[in-house]
Image (cartoon, rainbow, N blue to C red):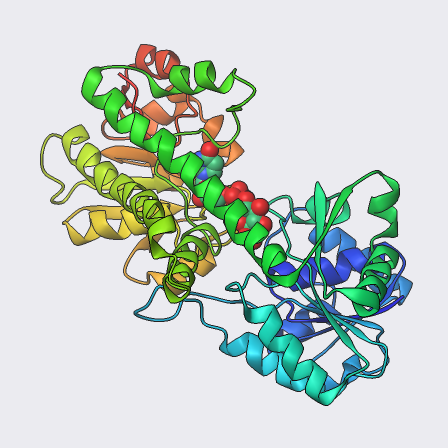
Length: 437
Ligand code: UGA
């Protein structure tokens, strides 16, 4: 099929490359000319495992092109809207300016029979509003809402082999036609038995925000348990293993630590609360305020634990932060808990050095006041404390003996509870986990 992808960020660039991999003819467009030039040369503008190799493969096939000219989407049968919907400055609500601008541009190129497919995460009601605009200009084109559930770090795999599809479509023949088009796009995954749910617009939009809210709630739940474990002298990791053994609860997303960050979970729960308020259903989501508060409290707690770890005062202490990205296998630093902790420690007088295998250049752009050291050994040198804040494999596998030989004081705070406490302690380290005795 002939496909256009509008917006080539973390979501759109991966989607475009994966659609070409599936055999479709794809054009990806974005207003950012530098990003488009990089993509056209086969360079991924961000770190995502497998993306660079995939881009190279599909660009050579000739099935994938990138362009900064919005009218190059003409001729596509299906147009995917993949632009970002960040949090508005000073508010909880989502900023839909990029989406509205992309949609207006798209209307100039739509042809009869086209299907426009929204993938961006939006406040419920957005699809119905956009469908009305589409109807006015192009009564013979259809809008579908098809939320994306990919995780950064697994984006290629999640796009090629998702665990479900949700198609929000209008009722009647128009909706059935749009669903049939999407079935054509996703034929390969559907043939593998991937579930597909056909819904109205509002349900499709809500599936996405409800899923992210549930995941955020699970993380904040276990982090709240970590606070209680700290107070009671219990171990939250064992607690998570034991409650997670109950199939109804499940062990996934019960890793206590410094909390969730990134470009999705934090802003999505806030936008969801804001939208529920507009709809008069704010009471239904007041618990998300608590989920957010627990999450933010994690960061404050880690600063306090670090102060205790280095003897009561942060002033002049050399702190090495292992990890800047909001999660491993990503260079994304949007709302990264690791960086917000690093910045807070620095503000309170510590001399903070941050290291990360991929995210340093993005981190430097956001927090120029911090010191960044790409070389792990150099970062460890003469540290008064190490803080493992993003669980990259190289930090999980760090040798306590080798690290112990270069630091000034053997203090480690394991902000993701991924190290073997006994092993570090027996190598002479003062080990501090989260919610662990
Ligand atoms: C999240 C969802 O998992 C995806 O399904 C969704 O498509 C995506 O948002 C989106 O809306 O686009 P992502 O932001 O890539 O994906 O990252 P997650 O794997 O969900 O992790 C989010 C944060 O939670 C990270 O900071 C991670 O370190 C933290 N986390 C995760 C925990 O603190 N504990 C856990 O047990 C799991």
